[in-house]
Length: 83
Image 1 (tube, one colour):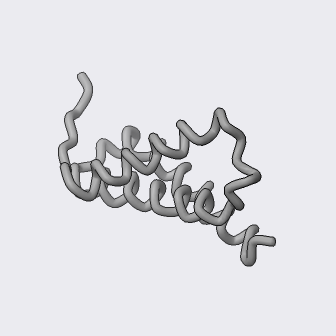
Image 2 (spheres, rainbow, N blue to C red):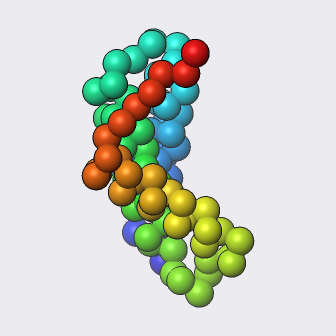
């Protein structure tokens, strides 16, 4: 059983929702880094609480990709604006 499940899911969902606001606000690089990094951290925190035996095989690659994105933010901070 995951403790604080509802609060974790709420925080993860709210932080992911904040990503969509970045484009509307034409946010600067620092704000993008903060919002995207926060969302990744919350989502990964939720993922890490799922027992390994309950994770479907098709989700393992997705979760690995999210961890990779988080590591990229930590070690290679580069943002490019789309045109």
